[in-house]
Length: 383
Image (cartoon, rainbow, N blue to C red; front, top):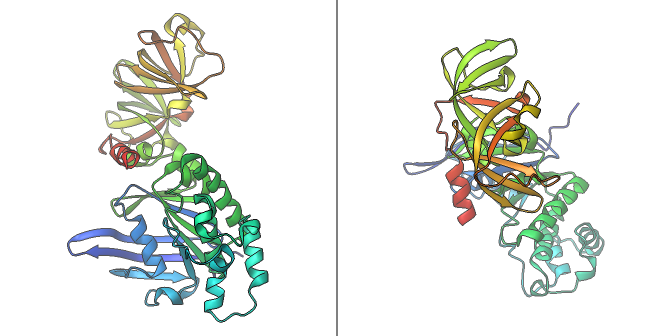
């Protein structure tokens, strides 16, 4: 039987400020010992949700429970949670050892040496114990903040954009470092971020938030491979979305028409109502697509979805080449090809055939905004 004593449960929790609703009524369970991410663009309600768990924000409706305990009315210091913020808020006049020991000393614990040393070993900072915060790198300061929070043995560690101030290379190192620490200590981590890669690298489960609601919840692979809305399809990575009409249903497959092409879509991967003559959005990720020069079209195996087009633009980014292809079904079709054997003919102006396995295709409700989520990604990149 699974121990649920450390589960974080939000029941009907919401937050309004006057006429503005920051978080619509939300039910969410974070299992004990998991690494859980709240992912979304600025203003989506993720930080407000985290602050309600921490007790820093009072819910307008609903309850916050940790295990069997309703903590909604408890002040932050009485909740078994600790928070690590983007600004690490280390005490500049104390060295690393004393920063980590602070919580224990405040609780009147006299013998702190062993616990502090163990915690510094966990975050791999044992040799930096007598340095002041200003003598450390951003990544080291971040690890001190994590150690200071964990030494109090909280049931839940809340992380509010903790890697936001770090440069890209260090951020990637720290993603792996935080995941290692979480695995070793085995407590629940709830991590707020706007960075899709960060959430997908670290979390077991991701809740994608949009406009105060959870748009979709699942493992990183599930969200990426089977997005249930255009927002998730566009916000998590890149998706090519094609407006299509249902032509027929044949067993486990749906046949759709888009411009002059017929495409196959697995019925199990279509979250939209798919009746003959109805509209759907057909989605395919750029890395799932193969690009073949039109002269070699005869070499493409049967049974693959295919679309013709003209290369409009290419960019070489080392690990792959990114192509933008003009097609009858979509103006700017994105294709990512690994740089294994590059075809020198695949240059702007070349006539090509895009083809992929029908199994990689997903279907969404055409009533949604086809561009939902794209602006959020662009806004976060600009910020």
